[in-house]
Image (cartoon, rainbow, N blue to C red):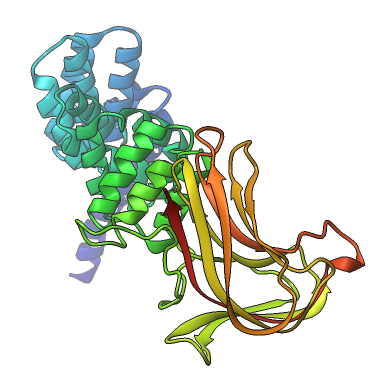
Length: 401
């Protein structure tokens, strides 16, 4: 009985081995031919998805559009979730101005999430329809898939941000911190209208970090647009209906922010600048300690926006053993060609709190903005050395009739 079973099992085993071998040979043939000779691959496996796709792509390249469409539909019959097939069908429909193109590209975008062709087409279509949020959602997808394209696309987005509606939609998306946001913000330089619209929209939405806000104001000032910078800054530091003094935070009642038209603290080796309570004042004062080193500036300054006219700078100060070659000096300096329009008397020696007053005139042109600075008027050399202390408080600039 056992002998009979063995005799029957041997042919069956041989058939199984032969079948397995045939399948291996077929698989090898399909893998070998599916790209170069997809028709031969399909003879071994009629429904092989990759062979069907390569055959359809070849037919499209040869202009055999009806055959390619039929092959792509055959592919989808075997692989309904094959997104690339929908992309190719959508491309054919688009070339034929078919209304099916949009629906096919939408399907392709869902079923081929790593492909940029479908979202790029959908973005272009949404732009044509002025559906900017939908267009930007697709652009965001493209740039996340192909981040190397961000610098190029950012320049286009900046150009389009001159349109107020597009700038609003772009600001809303940038507020969500997409990875390509820095490229857009850096591309705003040299595009003042787009910069004003986009940064203004971001600022209104609370979408700017403190550093981005400060950089924006600095960019406006660097472009000579001091009026625009002042308007943006003033809106955030004063309540509606109130007026700002000519010198902001002149009593140093709050620690200077260094942003916009607040006091700036420049780092100067050899000068220690702090803001602290002082005898003889009701609040804080600026304290400058000079360490007997060469300094050109004390590092205390504030940008101003004074219209043409005559003004008086007044402040209170006291000094302890303040020594320098020519004494320190307050200056009002135009950012334009007009240069220095006001200088104080020399500040030197030791004295208790006393007033300082300087009358100066801002010309009607060549002076779009000004700087108020405490400087050392000595150009260079050993006479630039400064030692001692200076306290400053109650800085004001008042218009003169």
